Image (cartoon, rainbow, N blue to C red):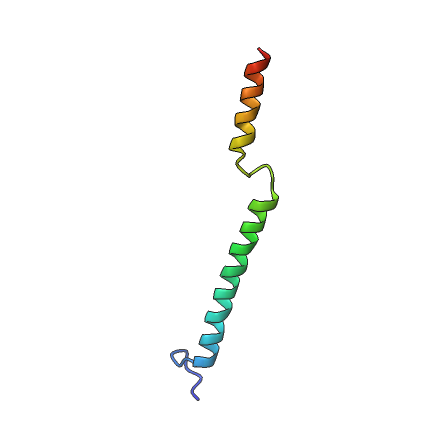
Length: 59
């Protein structure tokens, strides 16, 4: 094979593409876990509603 920069090795290109897809999936899963296990960033509409309702009753 030629050592030219224009020549592509299909096996390497396919492996690189697979690796990039895997890294993308890992990143998405990591973000999903961070959202799930980070309570400060999770929206809590029901808890907020109940707190407001309880505060209103106390007045």
